[in-house]
Image 1 (cartoon, rainbow, N blue to C red):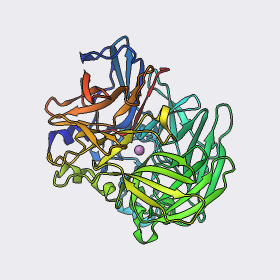
Image 2: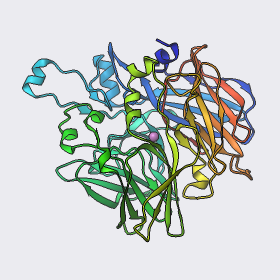
Image 3: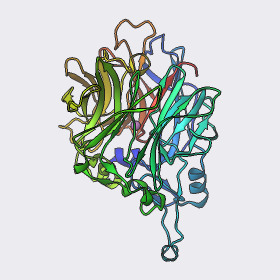
Image 4: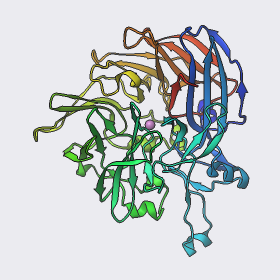
Length: 470
Ligand code: CO
């Protein structure tokens, strides 16, 4: 097996606290703050292996920039799924695509009912002043951003009225809005709003017979958007845990993709329309122009990408991953005109980011930063960082032989005059050296300005954010 996949989907042996990482190059003076990242810290429990990239047990990573230096720490999220896996040396909780094993006796008696994971591994968020590790099952975990110690369970709704949430809440001024799904005989999509000091509030809800797998949603100044790909589930199958979570979902392209648009203030459904079937994890940006609601999304023809993330398939190195196409969808709010879309660039990407703090819900944005695949290198995992100019349709890439970068996070220079005046941070696994480094790039020229060596490999992770207040 290729070394990069053995280590990138392996196990992190140590929880480290390092005051100063070895640095090559110079960090710009204005960079002060902390990058917090989430992702799997191990794909093993005892001798048992998890099966899918979205299965491993959560680990937080922290990179703090002060006076031109970078400190580092990493820690497993102290949740029940992790603690029991460690104690019992076996998989004890049900993850995205892995269930614990049951004896034949349990199966015959029908007593197997795996507990759903609380290992919130996909993203981090500052939700009304609390730092929270975000996962798709409804139990989220608050943590201390200084020590990375877990603080306790965080729920969008004190009664836990939902089973899953997206890991991409939108933040606008002091409001945090997220889309959750409650499964039942009658299932519901539920938009929840959090504001500091108040109980979570239900903003809008929509009854649904066969809920879709939704990893994100769109939000513009006035509207909330559910793009309901036809990758759907009989909710009772999820509740009765017939199979690992995602394996209950079925692709039904004949349904098309339904688009639900809600008024952000009243919560009223103002439009329901339909377009051809497609699949996506990530909405990128959404905005309004006259009568049109426009949203950009990293789209695939079908959910085959989820199959491509089974570890045996990545490790077999036979196929390169499918990539997402940056599409711009337009919905006319005042007429029954058909939904249209255009492709904005040729490069195929995933984990798209942009200057969210300044340009979310703003149609004038120009640059998207993502990871992608070099089709000539034929690696079966992401091996380049892509900067897409969605106004010209042109892309530039960063890559280095035997290097596998993670999600690129953009940090704007506080004195910036142009959209791409800032830096990009990406944790890169260096296969030849067997460890990872934090790559610091100039976002404008898209070239390296510094790298900080991490004394171990950081497993292939998902999302993170930069905070200037830590
Ligand atoms: Co995501």
